[in-house]
Amino acid sequence: MAGILFIISAPSGSGKSTLVNQLRSLVDNLEFSVSYTTRAPRGSEEEGREYHFTTREEFKRMVTADEFLEHAEVFGNCYGTARRTLAEAKAHGKDLLLDIDVQGASQVRRNVPDAVSIFVMPPTPDILATRLRNRSRAEGGVHEDVIQRRLAEAKQEIENYREYSYILVNDILARAEEELSAIVTSERIRREGQNHAEDADRLVRLAEGCRQENAGERVQPVLAAFGLLDPGTANT
View 1: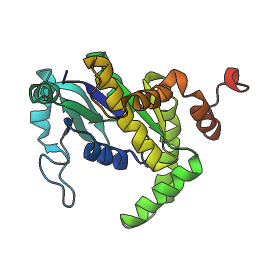
View 2 (view 1 turned 60 degrees about the horizontal axis):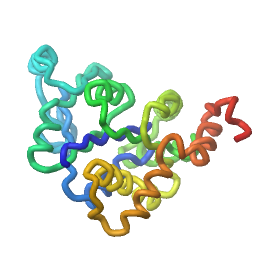
View 3 (view 1 turned 90 degrees about the vertical axis):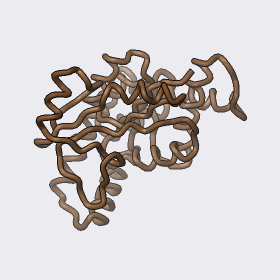
């Protein structure tokens, strides 16, 4: 059964891009959704690889024609995911992976209720800040005001974790990679009703441990570190 839509969201700097790239190298028949944007290409970006670059006028036409699963305007530029990407993936016998922010994920879940949603958490604000600074240095310079804004945004995004089916804490990259791959495999097994994967039972158990309702032991320390620990769960 092709055509499963996997949504993955995470605060900036959580290592989501690394996880997605590794997942695509490990898992067959998984198409990556390329979003549309009205912003200009940056650096070595290519049409159809990072984004589909389009005009604001064409973007507005697509919105009016209800051609997007989700769309939003961010810092003056428009971004959106075309509905046809899911149909095209299914027609080619593939599932679709959508890398998207919390706002967009909420829209997609309304349009595709059976989508599989995955939220990636950084383990602590300090580790997230270090990752953000390292990335900023690699891009040419660290701006502390931007780092602090990203940390504040991360806290707000993490507050929405209950909207997601699965939670990953990216403290150990190799483990997070295995968990993400296990989630995809487990969902395919569940929906197909067949067991084609090697070591499938272990992968299903690993994925079940990442379900939001089962991930409390991993999630609670993250919530505490970001000052979001639910008072009712402080002693659980």
